[in-house]
Image (cartoon, rainbow, N blue to C red; front, side, top):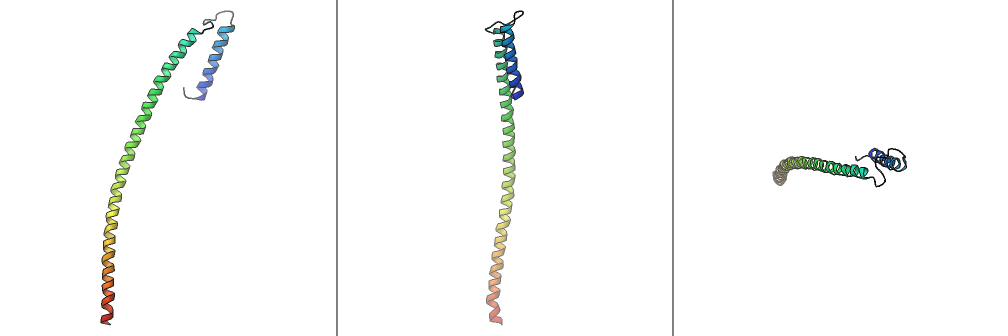
Length: 113
């Protein structure tokens, strides 16, 4: 019901129905106010409403599943980032210790030489 093909076929059907029931000399089963056509259109509108609600529910379910997946990925990434930050902190501490040792060696080296 959501395609251009449906719209085109639907409009052609409506036009044929109106022309045939207005112009036909014999067997026009639904004269001018087109009450039977109106009934069919009302049923079609009811079905389209139900189909739209079903599609909206499905879309909401897909969106919820994607949001849950994104949340889980974000949580896993957060843990990975925390591990990397801790590793980085340890490396900075080690570099600081190495810098202090090098500075101490440089201070002691001239006095020995």
